[in-house]
Amino acid sequence: MDVSAVLSLLTAEDYTIAREVLQRGFAALFFIAFLSAWNQFPALLGEHGLTPAPRFIKLTTAAQAPTLFRWKHFSYTDRRLRIVSAIGMILAASVMLGLPQTGPAWTTIPVFGLMWWLYFSISSIGQRFYGFGWESLLLESGFLVGFLGSHEVAPSLLMIVFLRWFVVRVEFGAGMIKMRGDSSWRDLTAMDYHHQTQPMPNPFSRRAHLTPAWWHRGETLGSHVVQLIAPWLLFLPQPIASFAALTIIITQLALVITGNYAWLNWATILLAFAGISDSFLAWILGGPWPGWGLSGSSLAEVAGPSGATDATGAGGAPADFPLWWAILVAAFVVWQCVLNVPALRNLFSSRQLMNASFNRWGLGNAYGAFGSMTESRDEIIIEGTLDPDASMTSGDWRPYVFKGKPGDVHRRSPIVAPYHLRLDWLMWFAALGDYRQSWFYRLLERIGSGDPQIRTLLGPDPFDGQAPARVRVRVFTYRYATSAERRAAAAAGQPRPWWVRSNPRTMVEPTDLREG
Image 1 (cartoon, one colour):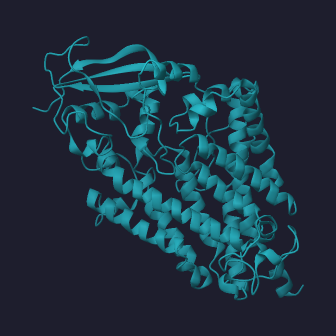
Image 2 (spheres, helix red, strand yellow; image 1 turned 90 degrees about the vertical axis):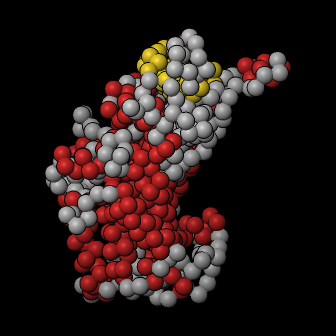
Image 3 (cartoon, helix red, strand yellow; image 1 turned 45 degrees about the vertical axis):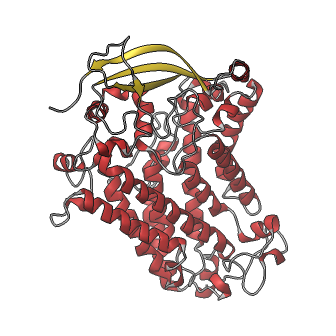
């Protein structure tokens, strides 16, 4: 067979826009992740953090936690952490601006590879504060999308298909975790609770929770249909694949609207774009597009959703697909397929793992979320007082406010995603029983001593920088205020509540935690 004919079969010339969305989108998520590390890592995990990374590095091996901070000439300091974060943000910004994409075919590989290694070096020593599935999702996605190449070459069909398989691992894996993990997903009652008990509600979560029961049943059933069926339709011809990808994107956008899940939903949306062709976008949205698609004309001129296009690069220049590039991409995909074997087995295992890695580099992972549903919401409230003689029933106790998590019953939940408030998320787990971890008691010690580094992670300081004389911790059960309760409060001239809390319990008695 003619080599040129084989190479033409390996090109995905109708996915130039998908490539741009994938590469620039994941670069934007890397930028946010590095920014989060710059802002939060020193206080949480730095030299004087709640669970110091230098100590963790000494207690582990390179096999257990690979990181560039093990290099003897670059051992961990907070300053070096911020240098790494700054380099990562610069690299991410360059891809967002499209700079590496203008070079030779291979230039996107080292740029994404370096972002992957830098963030992997941070995440691998992040301990409990980086123990979230979206960390590995970002890392694995970033490792892959560099092999979509620059504008000099057409997107590779092998990479597009492999990224669709990635969507199967993420979405189908999450769907099966739900079906196997909790009866509420099987009897369609999970969404009766989810909007109220999710870790980080946003301003629309309350309205979503207060919808009728029949709507919640539809939400749960729709989740099953999209997660268990739609990912497999990505392997069917166009426009079926594009419609399947669109259902995934719409479902993920609904989650974006009703919750704060860091960059989890945005990463899934980006991956789903691997199923959407340029022709489909032109058919649905028209054009023109910013030099990403067809040569010499608007994408709006494409006849229909399944129409093929000529392979073109950005700016309308014909995109090549040389033999050496085809061999490199094919070898990479074969290697990735081998790494994916454990994840494939896990998908169909009765003992399916959630958010698990099967190798030290975190490639070919298992994903999933909310395998079990929390039906009630408890919130930990940390309070302080300047009165050294205060008791549980006396003294001017004032709560420490967190930036995102519920506390003040009158405060509307904020939008923070795709940014990740790590301490706020850990406080949700603490309320489920994770407070026995060392980081929680160190947090109380730092608050009690008036530590300025920890205060940067919290909201307004109730004591304007003073260390409290005593600290106590209470737990309340929270639920959303109903519309009737909000109207009654307004009629009585009182602030309308966003939450109603009850059942106060004492977790930590009033204690003096000041140093010295």
